Amino acid sequence: MPRTIVVIGAGISGLAASLRLSTAAAGVGKIILLEASGHVGGWLQTTRTQDGAVFEHGPRGVRPAGKVGKNTLQMVSELGLESDVLPVTYSHVASKNRFLFIGGKLCKLPSGLRSAFVTCPPFTQPIIRSLVREPFVRRGEDYDESVHSFAARRFGKELAEIAIDGLCRGIFAGNSRKLSVRSCFPTLFEAERKFGSVLIGMIAGGGGGGSSKDPRFTSELVSRAQAENWAQWTLRKGMKSLPEAMEQELQRRGVEIHRDTPVNSVQQTPDGAWEVHLDGGTMNADHIFSSVPAKVLNRILPQSWVTLCDSLREIDSVSVTVVNLEYDGSILPVTGFGHLVPSQESGEILGVVYDSCSYPQQDRMGPPTTRLTVMMGGSWFQEAFGDPDTVPQDHLLQRATETVRSHLGVTQTPLRAIIRVQKGSALSLHIYSSNTCWLFGGL
Image 1 (cartoon, one colour):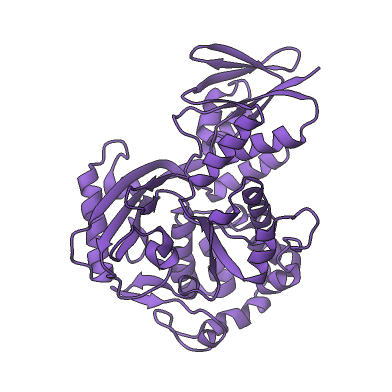
Image 2: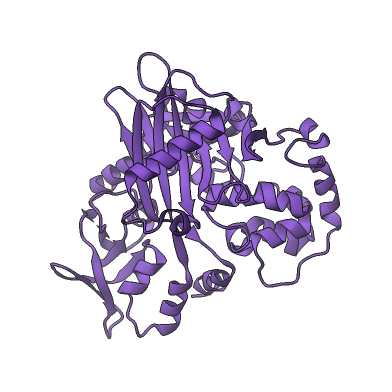
């Protein structure tokens, strides 16, 4: 008998799960995708202006490396988006030039073998010294530890407090002293456990993504990414193009997509099926797939599932303010991907992305302009700005423009500013949350 599957949440994970189920699941009669908000794609949000500019309010690029990267490029091809891909190679200035703002100035991070042998401010010694000693550091024995503790133990306190601290703020908008290395950087954690060294483990692992000649990967994009040495890529009209194309393909395959349809609760029936309770009634399903945040899932699950619900409550998330700015002319004092701000320099300012350097194709038509994105808040949001529901937008804009002025010397008023407070957008996998993640792996 054909089964009914309900997927809760139409972010990128829910869309991908629905695509996979509609392709590979045998005996499926109906797939229903439920989304509480009025749009699909989750944090993949893009503004396209009439003059041709593109502004990202969430993720702005995808790495092609590894199995996940290759699978994503394969999906992009199958969705007919190949001609929209904008790649950035490792030789591009946006890949080679990445900065830290520390001590009141921009400092270029080492890139390439030669720079590892010289002292590059703000570091007090060549990076090679930390790398050479790493294979001789004793293997950790704890079940888990903070990212800061792991990095300080293996690479030294200076790298941990400057580079790794900034990296965690850029990726997770989180505090490296609280984030779990086992959850946030599992490849590094497993390399140490298996080989006794991160460097040896990474060399021995060889990437683990499979060859571009793997018969599963028929997309020309996969081969191009490897041949041309892509570091990242985006889509010409913004990352929002990806969920838009996924939604169109799901509709073509007959998947039902319901927006503005929050799930109030789910309840398992005696025969193992499910009842999905909505504002407008009840929906029956044979199977449920969830792609909603942990706290939302905790709220809708049967509260008799005490162990799982308690674990879900432990998984936290933080809010991030994204301020997109556009300035007249080419106003940057440097070129590159952008700069991160270690917590010792500023709590609430996470970093600034130089969007026009990576993807000038997304600038407005006409005379040159410069697009920047200022990222603020994260684990420091409440302390710096208060409640994300009530923080005044003019205060956020003022803080963002002050950052651009003090970090980059840009004194002019922006031509355009877009402010988004992305509430709960960054998963905060603290050390105590790591046990929860491994609990899910065993369910």
